[in-house]
Length: 291
Image (tube, rainbow, N blue to C red; front, top):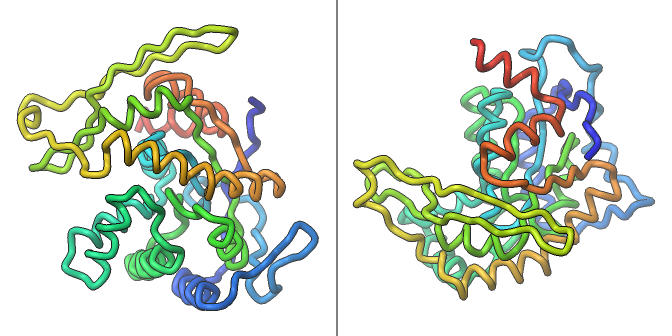
């Protein structure tokens, strides 16, 4: 895998609130079509400013793609901590809405429990509210996790901002299924753990993969629960829907030269250093560890 050059760049002065308003406006119209030979309206285009040398003056606008359960949240969150940008996960936004008494809660519960994708309109509404709330707190830049999931969402996003990079995490399906079924949540603190121990031997030239379990501390061990949608039937349906709806999004960004394919070689200890290497960010991690 080729090592990428520096990807952090300064953003133009377009505000997140105006961007969120534009996203909502786009979502209420017919699906835009920005084919390979067409460009989005010039009003919405953002021109990146010259690269600055001080990391504190840079920000990122990145997207994480990958099958449900592959680890997008884990690696996106780590990168956000490293680069000091917010991690915006649409799955978290949906779960927050589910736990509320809002008007969407019952509708979302039915969709999630059946393993279906939440509609563009609902996701865009939740994302727009999150972006506006973040700007009110002074947030700059972001890493999106779980959005876009459809071509329509990708076209809307492409029309209102300049996404620097799209990181596509990949994991072989047999390992992914075991990993999803091993997920557990502490009912008291909300911590995420995984009891699965994955050890798949390599064969026919394909490398094996080992992922150690992520076990809870003793005080959480007796409080673990399984997500209601983490059943084998629902997980397999989520993977099927993902392939049908989201894999075309990979080609959308691949054709624009923005897609980085990253095959997870194992668990966090094996994968994290290699991901930083692929992003040319090893020096950031070293600086962070020394701070």
